[in-house]
Image (tube, rainbow, N blue to C red; front, side, top):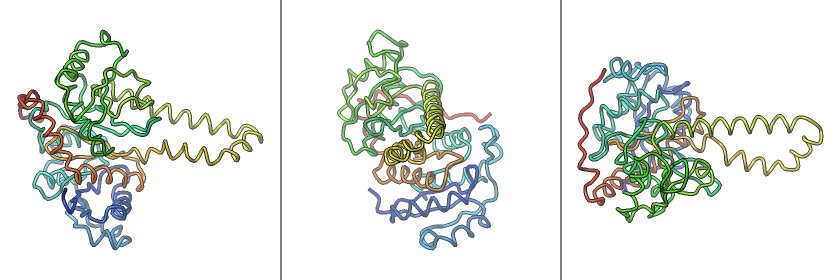
Amino acid sequence: MPSKVRIALDAMGGDVGAAVVIPGAAISLHRHREIEFLLVGDRAKIEPELEKHPALKAASKIIHTDVAVAMHDKPSQALRRGRKTSSMWLAIDAVKKGEADVVISAGNTGALMAMSRFHLRTLPGIDRPAIAGVWPTKRGESVVLDLGAAIGGDAHHLVSLAVMGAAMASVLFDKPRPTVGLLNIGTEEIKGHEEIREAGDRLRAVNLPELDYLGFVEGDGIGKGLADVIVTEGFSGNIALKAAEGTARQMAELLRNEMQRSWLSKLGYLLARSAFKALRDKMDPNKSNGGVFLGLNGIVVKSHGGISSEGFAYAIDVGYEMAHYDLLNKINQMLNREGGALSSVQTAPEDVS
């Protein structure tokens, strides 16, 4: 474990930029005093925010650029226009050069993935990276991946997701052998696409000591917390994520409307206020902020673009945990222990279109 964790922040990413990034960094620094920050962005916007946080100022270095990747830029446009000049690229470059242990951005997701994959490359044995997120459940939390980085995938891809997700869960949840399930339309072994059934057979056969494969999990099993890690390809994962987020907002709005319908409803709310507060804290999107790009030769964390400073601090916390407990080394160890089956796949360099 490194004594210091160096974090590069894209200070111009997201809907607000430095006005959220800098206060968020200050909050996270209060929780993790051993963090050092590289703040990448427009010095004229960063320095006034830094003056409000003396402790953060002492733990930070500014890398100046006034070029930012727009939230609406296509990945190919971002690579052409922002390569080697934008705050997003320079933050990633700090990880590439070994000047930072992790990069965190609230910017354009497609651009961040394209730049990270182009510049950092993927780990040996990983053909495509994935986005992994922490999902609140009845039992606590689960790691779910892929949440939208890559559409589709064969059995090899799903097995690599299981390995990487288990490594992340072991770091976050302090479990030496996290449980893993494959998202499917049923729990029976005969159901689902061929690649899902084949991935299940491979995971059962290899019996890795670092993960406990449970079998197939249906959609409602995610919220139940039936496994520490839920694996699916990016198309299904993104739909599941957006459906869950939409349902949570819908339920909150319906509940709020019902609580205002009559004085009896308002009285009931007052009597159950502590229970509602506990529920609100449990479902707080700030605390689930921070999607980790797994499979890259470096640690990249994506924050929601419209998040608050407190939410951005949680994304920094996730990046800190991934670097402090050496996520990349854990993933490499697990890939190698599988007998080289995953590491035998060599990823070809990508062309930029």
